[in-house]
Amino acid sequence: MSDLRKGMWCGVGAYASWGIFPLYWKLLSDVPVLQVISHRVLWSSALLVAIVVLSGQAASLRESVRMPGVLRTYALAAALIGVNWSIFVWAVGAGFVVETSLGYFVNPLLSVLLGVFVLGETLRRWQWAAVALAAAGVIWLAVVHGEFPWISLSLATSFACYGLVKKRAPLGSVHGLTIETTILAPAALAFALWCEHAGSGVLFHRATMTTALLIAAGAVTTAPLVMFAAAAQRIPMIWIGILQYIAPTLQLAIGVLVFHEPFTHEKLAGFSLVWCALVVFAVEGFLAHRASAVVAPPE
Image (cartoon, rainbow, N blue to C red; front, side, top):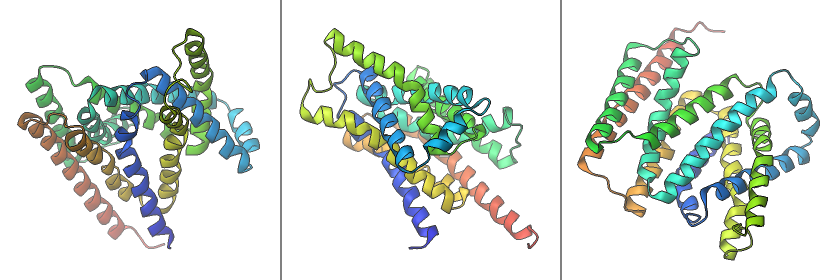
């Protein structure tokens, strides 16, 4: 199999995995959210440390941690991903999968705005049009439902800010997530032990399936990351940009078709504006990329 094809399959696998996450976390909806998150952090950290050690990268990771600013950068990333994971797991268990999908539809456009206002990047005319359409869709949803879509925007904002921090971070994805989960692990372990002491801990105290799902949360979290890292190394970023919509599309389908969450005509209208924005953004990006490839001087 060629590197390009392998990269495509890895990309599809990563985003499809993230897309069906609601099915997994829904199975743990009877477990308190903070306990789910604490076990997700602990088992992810254990698995990532094992991967780093077994692949002979422990020494290089220790050297990287000593670099100026590394711990500060990844502490911020850890806080952001911890917030994102907590909101997502809670929202799935509470029956707001459709709202989570909206958050990840909006996320790429919010990332673009952070690029403009934080990194000083510039947007072309049609990119601004896409952002305006997405904003109109979110405002419409807020108006027709009479409440601020905080779940969607919290997920989009936390993950977009996480992406911004990771863009400036000096390490690769596996090393970075290893540091992030290790930073969160002491608090997660302390909370898990406190729950055990208080008699409210669920690990080994519920059905065997619940215990297995909590332990497997580490692999469920890290496997898509490894596939994504493989994809990013092998395929153009514009393809990554298109593949990323697999995840929220699957989340929306699961929310409506599997969990039977309401999807009214008013909600469809708001989502349609966001989808139009994504189409405009994707087409504009593809045309701009093709035009730059044509005018680029031969090497």
